[in-house]
Image (tube, rainbow, N blue to C red):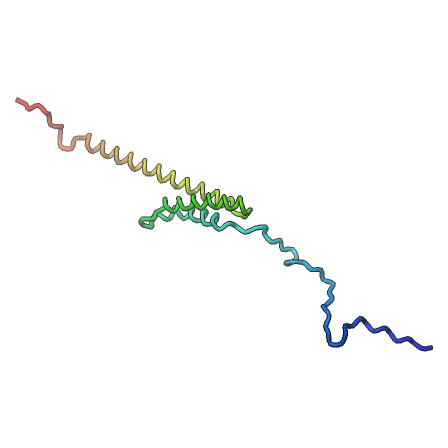
Length: 142
């Protein structure tokens, strides 16, 4: 009884390497990791941060908080347009930046009206009390 030689495994021709064979399926990324669909719009972040910072920007001379609130409003509207076109994330930040910016400007306007009213009332009180007696009469007394 003669045994037949075992067939040689499929080997590449001498000196050549073959691609590795693996049973691991190709999966992009890590298992359990779901990448976000899109990035957050950077102008939406600028709008949100500027709207919050506008309340603290009153200590900066010349620039002031109203200017920073206007920056928040403008960048918020630009970000909303970009988000609609590109389907990025951050619509809530753009909307909140616009709302807080308008709220800041409205509060600044109300504060200005209150200060002007108080100046008016102080002027009326000071000048109506007649500091020094009665007003001189235009007709001379005999």
